Structure formats: structure tokens, C-alpha cells
Length: 183
Image 1 (cartoon, helix red, strand yellow):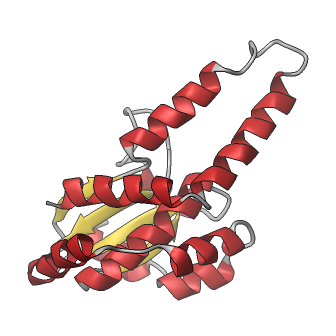
Image 2: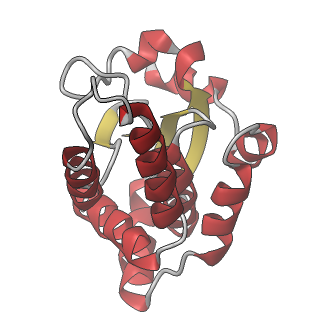
């Protein structure tokens, strides 16, 4: 299926957000609170002339999506880039073309396309700094066969989600990473 067809199949941000069963409050809070500085505004305004659109592979249960989706939606609004949202597990044919490291269905994935539907950029699932944080946190977990592994892992992911959805420094890493990719 051509990327334009996938785009047309997708939901708007509002449709996606209002349909969420998980992380809706986090997505809304980040969306309402994220700030784009003057340099961000200039950069994003300059992107308008490219006439891009975007396809987002996501799911409401995904902590990374709770961080990235609202930030990149705000950036897209300034750039006049219309984003459409597809649920990963309902769109595996497309998802399988954008596997992380060739094996993982990690989300969110942002596929930016031109008016003809040609892929021009892809970003996701995480900014490098966020990936480094996750790696560091995982390295502090006990061995997977440890009796307290599941509890510690659950707590680690809960604390990680809390940090990334409330800390503007985390948001800035996403903004900067996306700007590098879109430049």
C-alpha cells in the first residue's frame, strides 16, 4: 500500500487522543505544557514550504508515545505538517517496514512524506538521550531470574514514564532530536 493511502487511513490527533484508553492524561498534559522557544518556532516555520505530512505508528499504552506524540504534534502544527495516527497492531504491514534494528516493532515511528507520498524522513522511537536513560535504568535492574526482577522492572518503567511525561528537560531532548532529523 502506498504511503498516501496509509496517511488517508489514519486518525487525526484529536481522534487518536479522544479514543485513548491508556495515557490520555499524560498525552494531554504534555501537549498542553510543552513550550517551543523562538529558535524552534523559526526552524519549524521554515519547514512549511516543504509541504510535508506525517504518518505516526503508535499505541495508547506506549510510554514513549505519551512523550513523543504530543511534542511532535505541537511541532507539526507550527510546521503545517498534518499528522495522521495509525495503531501499530492494526497496521502491521506498514509497521513491519519500519522495524527498529530490523527486528523490533518499537513505537512511535513518525514517517514524514511529501505530497506525492514519498518518504522524506523517519524519526523514532526515541531520542538518543532518552534511549541512553532507558539503557542505564535497565542496567540497574537485577538479573531476569531474580525473584524481585518483575517488581523492580515494573517500578522502573513507572518511574521512567513519570519522568518523561513531566520533565521539560526530557521534552527538550525530543524537540532537539526531531529538529536534527528534519533539517
